[in-house]
Image 1 (cartoon, rainbow, N blue to C red):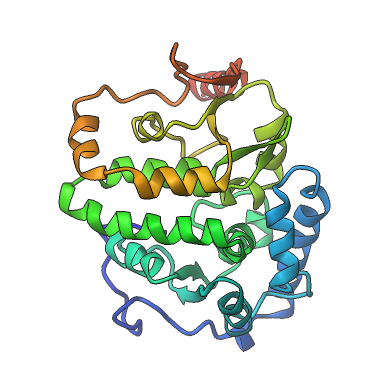
Image 2 (image 1 turned 90 degrees about the vertical axis):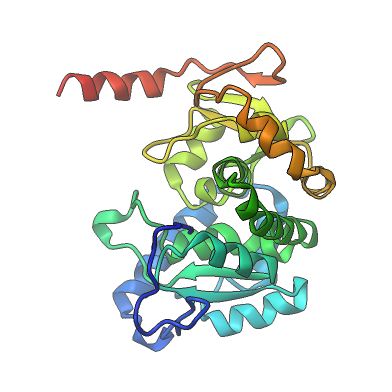
Length: 291
């Protein structure tokens, strides 16, 4: 949701928020939400962390139609002190981090068209609200998101936002978690995608590696396809602890002196759950080369 090059559109507040204008959603737009919700909610229970499904219930997101941000925020405030605010789309990094640091989650208000049902490049309300908001009802994950926002504000002074963006990407957007003997989904980019909800756990192609903060912050990621590597955290408590207890000030210059890692890299020091075949990525590259 962040882009440093953006200019604030006319009609937005200083903090880039806008009214959701819930009454302007058409029956077709509500129907699109219901279709996407039913498809994901039907296949996720065995795959996603229980905390996600609990968040759907606590926030009453199982009701039909696009959620009203005011009603959603009222329930979320009671659970963890967070609220959801509408923005016109991508926002500058400083604005994004400031909202997170103050327990406000920014969400786009538009919803994808039928032609974009399975993929769109810019996050829509289904990705932002269905994907992200349920876990904000979990106190530990809610604290992690705030800690990340505060870290982002500090990172501006170190010129290290790329490294911090990788942490967000591989946790908040595309993270896996180990619960008992099973791997579960929690990243919003996965749980809001039917195809990646299956790919991330079942496909032999991607690497699934144990989470290591510095290793993650050195690793490139893909924005145009399913991930070639997923990182597996042990718990939300451990993720929060590592984020809060790490002194990022000396970490950033150290990372700049370390080689960056390819999206499919597996290191001897990695804790490997799955050493992926990378067949999916290779097949896509072969198709692109043949055009």
